[in-house]
Length: 290
Image (cartoon, rainbow, N blue to C red; front, side, top):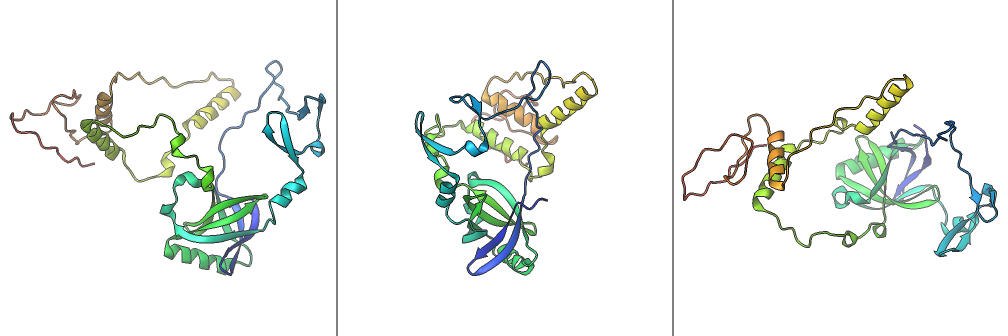
């Protein structure tokens, strides 16, 4: 792995020298734009439309557009001054429970390893966090950008996840068309909960694959070898026309072989008809074992 940052974790007066590595990588297949006439890759240039010429990096500055066409500009030195002193420190401010942080705050994950002289301090912090079950909330500057971060243990490794500041999270109130209150049909709700139970399983990351990326890789190989691209047949269109039928069909599709799905007389079912019950006595709901 490539070391992308060197510094130290600090909590109280304790310093833990660490090195940082990106914990994730993009597997997207990169494609370039070509000139369709000759298949030459297109080049992108920085061009000033007023001067009608290409510009060099030495001629560029940064600017904020406060009105259409009007900017306040900043030099590189001005921006560095505003950012303050950039320290090589991950300063832990508080220790909290991981469950207290909503996943919406998390951005990108990094692995932290001990520096050459920091093995003992690293092991001490790692073990202390393991046994207390806490994570650290810290400030860190990476590439001149200040960020909030969470320090936590993954297996036997300290990791750092940059997280958004609270004012960067958009309020739920801005989301359009949310229902003021959830009004649901009791029968539909019961079946939806049964379906959730039938589809519930321990999380196993290895079972999830990027089907689009695999299909694109296969298509690239077929084209390289001059073969015709083969596509999978489309699934037949569903005949489901309402929510109740969709729930019933989903339960039929996902249920274990020996499982019986309770049905009501008014609900059409693809399974065998349920035995008749005596009138005047309401049927008791049966518990479903998932």
